[in-house]
Length: 88
Image (cartoon, rainbow, N blue to C red):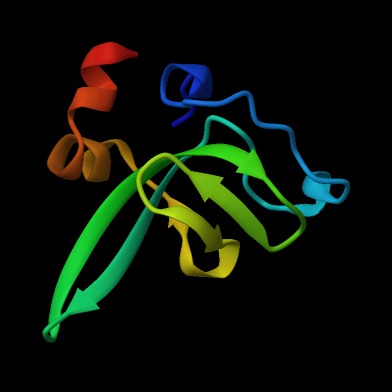
């Protein structure tokens, strides 16, 4: 899913020189699973800025390697951040 990233940005971000090499683009909704005390913790973020082929910035978990993310499905968004569906 893709959304208007400007709704979620607090600044006017500019992409890096090699941003076209990244598999994600501005507005893509991505999912990240981390672990806290051995338990999975899922976050859904909107891509706000693409730094280069490997790094990007999201609205929910800041700068992150693209390797740690995947595109969020509609089911993921509905479960973990339904407000994105309501406002887009």
